[in-house]
Amino acid sequence: MDKDHYDVLVIGAGVLGIFAAYHALARGLRVALMEKDRQPQGASVRNFGQIVPSGLSQQWRKHGINTLEIFDDLAKTGHFSIYKHGSTYISNRKGETQLLYERHELDHHDGYNSEMLSARQVLDLYPCLRSEYTMAGLRYEREYSVSPYAFMNELLAYMQEQLGLQFFPGCLCNDIQPGPLRKLKASSTRGQMWLADRIVICCGVNYQLLFPEHYDGNEIKVCKLQMLQTARQTKYSIRGNLLTGRTIRRYECFEECPSFRSATVACEADKASALGIHILLKQMPTGEVILGDAHQYVDYDGDEAFDFRIDQQINDLIVRLSKEIIYLDTWRIANTWTGFYSQTALPEGILDFQNETGVYFVNAIGGKGMSAGPGYMKSFITKLFA
Ligand SMILES: Cc1cc2nc3c(=O)[nH]c(=O)nc-3n(C[C@H](O)[C@H](O)[C@H](O)COP(=O)(O)OP(=O)(O)OC[C@H]3O[C@@H](n4cnc5c(N)ncnc54)[C@H](O)[C@@H]3O)c2cc1C
Image (cartoon, rainbow, N blue to C red; front, side, top):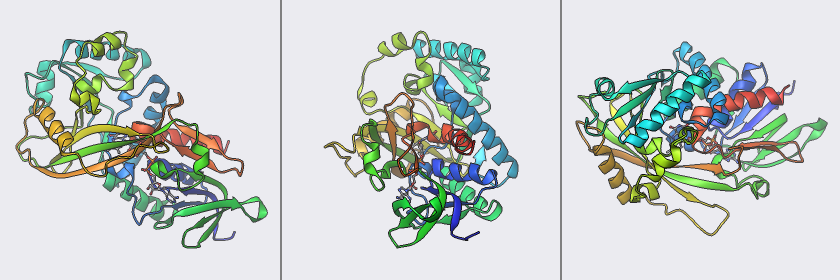
């Protein structure tokens, strides 16, 4: 076989592209992955790394549960910075507590294991929490937390060394045409060429670089998030993912609860909610605590643009709200960054289509890419080779 001919060529080494390649390799296929940067720099290495199917809508939970199974397999290898430390949602108001109870009932119905915790139980589990904030908790033991930057790079190395992935970093794909022998031909801005039977584009927010016209009418917005990381904590340790009251009022899974509307309507529309701030926390294995996040949305094809700077007012607000929730040894902020993801408002919650040349596109998974992307890409590859 021609060494430059692949069964599948994937463009974009974010979580969607990497897991498209991973599942194709698992079927014994010859797979290449192109990435425009020397190392991935997109949403998949900048995120929280909370693998929380608990937060997903009914429609997406099955992909989240498949994602957990994929992480269980990856964890067995011992190669990856992934931790099965669970997730806990903490309520601060009666309405939020009511939503936790209702969600717990629904979980029981769906066969997804969760446990209601009293304020005492939550505080025993998380001594760093403020007792005046904590009303109750909903705990998901099965969920993962990952260090996204380390994990993505470890997985890429593993796929090259153990599974035979051909990875082409620093290669920006700028064209795809029909090639000889009914193959597709992809080229890079440096003039390299690849031939493949199937090409899958997972290019995140860079969707204007290749066939931008295909995204028209798909109601895409790009979301800018701000994240903060404290200096290393010495005294406290926070186990797993912590999600707090504002998250309970924001995440899709709670919209399925009977009292969702009344519980959220009862809350004031303050500055933080206008900035899309809901407080999430997790601790890195090295001790630093990640705090976030704020959401600002822009229609990339419209007239708006993001301010490229970090908004200090947003960071100050995130810290202030976090201080109402937890105690830390140090609130010194050692690092802060932005991340961007693409999102579609279409009911499918993702763009997944093929163009007239036979190229596949998967994009705009929104804020659930780490929690549901690996599982979604498994079903995508299964369908592709059915
Ligand atoms: C701050 C932040 C926090 C988040 N927290 C969570 C969380 O805790 N849990 C969760 O489930 N989700 C979370 N998300 C969402 C999640 O990170 C995204 O849904 C997911 O990473 C999107 O993956 P992707 O593969 O579509 O895009 P990306 O990760 O952006 O990858 C796209 C890749 O394609 C490459 N590329 C683009 N065009 C080309 C081209 N023409 N040629 C070659 N390469 C190209 C880019 O360089 C990039 O590496 C968060 C997102 C952000 C920004």
